[in-house]
Each structure stands twice: as structure tokens, then as C-alpha cells.
Length: 311
Image (cartoon, rainbow, N blue to C red; front, side, top):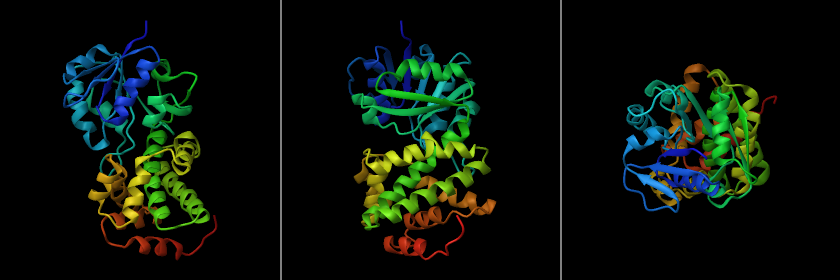
């Protein structure tokens, strides 16, 4: 008999996880702050104590709300529980990873993340795809694979948790930048430059934080970014396009229809890089655009006028 899988977070991705668990023959229990609309086969609750009966728990809340959710969850779980988050964010100007927040604020020690080119549609409809589970504990990967893996979803594993989390967060930011540039009419060649140099920026910062440089070239990094550029319906692309039309970040987020973590990541990443002396021109330009310090066309002009260096 398959275990009951808990999901903390009633947003689109959390609900998609619930559907995927049920489609795979398992039982899903979903917690949200407000009573969620019914989902076929998914038990919905507003009582966090109900999560205690789930050995595997997916944490599907934005990074800015993870600490609050972890504090509430921590009263009901212990070292037997496995926590796996799906956030594309980092916390604060120190770029603290979500897995660290979960370890610091709950008794759980077997923690991991689910990343790569997995979108809600992939999970809901069983569309063929792949992802990567980052954890130092094999049982975490095995539990996730049992809950979600199958003929249509290939799940790989890595013990570079930090690199996987940072890759995922920075890809979200780059997807926003790609949508922004595409809206301004930037062609395929320039988009390729933006994507590849953006991943170089991401790996520089990621390595400085303890991630493995190779992770940024794998499924959590380039693989995820390729899926975004190819058009997997990612909300970050829609947000970038709205920003490229000159909408404010608030209006653009409403149009994209989802909370986008890249908005808060951009400025924190810029400040972290400045403190460490790491060059991040793409992030600098995007962060300034988000704060209205430079016009959308000015962002592209600024990036294209930079002196070319040896790759």
C-alpha cells in the first residue's frame, strides 16, 4: 500500500502535486490556509496537524512564506518525516536556501528539493517530462520517485542540494529576463547570448555559495532553462513579457496569474554579488528595470553595449 503524501500549499503547483500522487495510485492530503476547492481523490484540510500522518511532505509555498509554514509544520512533525520543497526561490539578501530554512525551523533532518523542467501541467496531465531530486538521503529520492515517478516522468537524483536549489531559483530569474527580452523584439541569437551568459552569472554566484558548478549545466540549470525558452507555459515568461510592455511589477504579476519569486530574487542577488565582487550585469539590469530605474529598451541597450571579453 502506498503512503499518504502530504502537500503544504494550496496553490497551482501544490494542487498539481496532489493530482499526480492520486493518478499514480497514491493518497494525497493537501493543506492550505483557506479551505481549498475540492480535488478528485485529494483530501483537503486547513488543519496543519493532519500533516503529521504523512511521512513524505512536499512544501509548495513561495520562499517568502516558507519560514511561517515551517514554524507551523514544525509543531507536528519529527525526524521520521521527509520534507521536499518545490520553491524556485531563496530567502533574504544572504540567498539562504529553502532547505536550510526547513532544517532550521522544523525537527526534520531528511530534507530535499524537487527541481528541473517540471510544471504544473506536467504533473496534472501526465505529460512526458523529467525532474531532479536534490537530497543527501537516498530514502528521500526513493519516496519522491514512488509518489510521482512513472512512465511519463523521469526523476533523477543528486546530492548537490544547494546547487540544485540555486539553479532552480536563478533559472526562474532568467526565464523572466527571456520573456522581457522577447517582448522587446530581441532575436534568437541575442536570446541565446542572454541565456548562456545568464547561466554563467548564476554558476558564479552558486559556486560562491557552495554549489557544484556542474549542477548548473544539468537538468536543474540549463535543462530547466531550455524548457522555459521552448515554451512550457512558465509564468515567469509571461511576467517578463508583461514587464517588457511597460507594466509595473504588481500589474505584471496580476497578468501572469502567479506569484513570481524572481521579482524578489533579482535585487537580493544583485546586492549579494556586489558584496562579493561578482559581476552579474544581466541581474543588475533586470533588477534596475524592476525598480523603474531604467526603461525596458534601456535594459537591452545597456547589456549590448558592454565590452566583450574572452569567454
